[in-house]
Amino acid sequence: MRGDRLVRRIVVLAAALFAATASTAQPIVAEYRANYEVRHDGRRAADVEFSVAAAGSGEYLYRSVTEARGLLKLVAPNPATEQSRVRVAGNDLRSLQFDYVDGSRKGEDNFSIAWDEAAGQIRITRADGTESLPHDPDLLDRGSLQVAVMRDLAACRLPGPYRWVDEDGIRTYRYERLEDQVAETGAGDFETIRFRQQREGSSRQSILWLAPSQSYVPVIVEQIDDGEIETVYTLTAIEVTTPPPAECSGFR
Image (tube, rainbow, N blue to C red; front, side, top):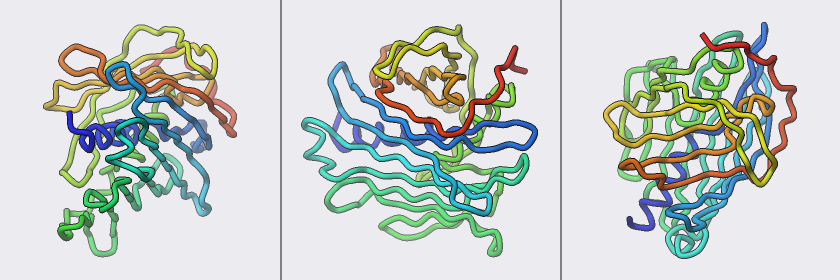
């Protein structure tokens, strides 16, 4: 696989997995910072940091920073970053802005997405121009997607399906509950619930190991292609500054 494609795949997988929320009678967003080691085909490929922080007026910022390692550093010498700005009001969650910087020298894959309710548009801006889609408040981005996943889990609801948009179009993720397991990570051992995440029309899938004690932040993620584990994220450090949600006796 070409190095630039691998870096991009690592960033895309990361962004679709790691923003987290907790939901009570008045849903809140769990603010946290988590670090992961990423291995591809058994080799260390990157280090990733994810964080969620309040931005005031019911808005939150999800941010991911991916540092390529080894030979991939030649492809992406700078950190690849993603940031999602979302607004939470009661049970409503809305994407507002998404920005991606690819970490390469030229930044040819950089893009942004803006939800413009007043204009009735979602604008996708790339290096080669801008296109517009009809405004859809239920359409998520890669960061707010996981906010929705974590809100549902914290409210004892099974996740998905979710529709989200990136520079290539609209996608749908579906989820399947798997057997619970204990995850062994560099940050300790965690009781986890596990789900298979799969995009409609794709044979690729991800196995999410989510820790209820850490507001359902994933502590291990395995990306599977052609039946083989290809890329693995393993937690190395985590700080959650919001109390975890109440334990669920079952998901509905």
